[in-house]
Length: 471
Image 1 (tube, one colour):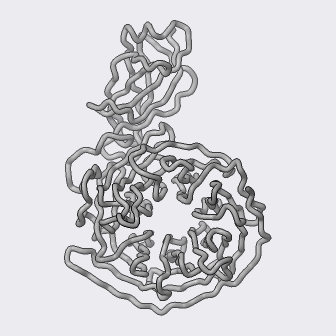
Image 2 (image 1 turned 90 degrees about the vertical axis):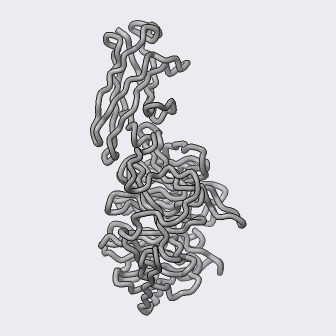
Image 3 (image 1 turned 60 degrees about the vertical axis):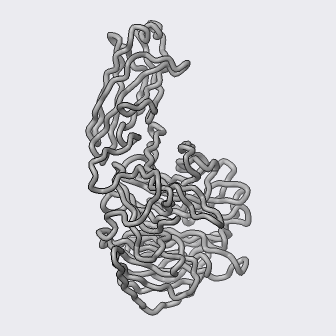
């Protein structure tokens, strides 16, 4: 069903100036924090993000408002005008490169692009069904909005141009993130899938995630891989969300690297910090803020008695987060979050800072297989396979390259060990066994599956099908 285009209109927003009220608290073994209470009570604080001018914007889901807070702590609230129903919710917001604030509100019936310098907004109708959900603004200023209600999709709005949601759009649930290359990714229609959305918003590529958890809670660009995500098992009215993990997917190979953060954790919002690490809010029985490097080294620390909902980084490198339970915006510096000070539960594979334990085997440690064009020749019973190690991979990439027939899965020889430095690509020569060589008929092009495994493990962590020909 296509969304109905609404002629752009200008509507003044209501500015509600808020008095500055700052509380600084410290408790033993906890991070010192600066707290800014939000004047409107029970606001239902949601996402917070940083604008190009250094101010930070946040959602007040339950009060039909969004807010802005300066680095000095001055809060201004903005009313969003008429609602379709009294209980309508503000869904999400994002800030464009030009500083305009995009917000999806009125339970997804409407969207608006707000100019903070004038307080004026251009409104967009998203239609009654499906409703708008998450919003992210790309490098070109176009806004991407997920659409959900019985049907799922995504719409791309370019200011000043007609827009619509079509049946050709990929299935996108209300988890949306922008990758480092500016592409948009969303949670797929299946709970354990992510989708790289095409540039026209009418196409996409779906990638499965391991079925050890439910759908991703957040998607964001990271230091390696194509897209990072947080995951956890959903809670109930009797239990907290749990069994959390953080990881990333490499679109080139389809491989994932995932670190478990513990049975008492549930990583939620996710953002890449200025230090190159991924930082996330943590819910569940152990609320706090976590961080993890490209090599899996990380920690989760509590922030006083506060329960982070969404986080962002200010220009000075400090973290600011919303706390829906305490109805406040909180500032904390990263040096106070270096080590874990809470019980994460069982099953943690994330590596504690300062330990010498190597990263758990995964895409980060074995690397990826670049796309191979044309037909690879088999010379003197050997096949040359490229292996690439992503930049920033701690300790480089190492593993074993194996070859088998794509059809039937029969091995072509013993796997060959390799080691590649971060940011580099190597050519690994794999010798075929006599039996493997006989499986390739001379002159015939055969599809062969290349597989990367970690030393001492049979689990395939990256794979790609190539064409080979024995001369």
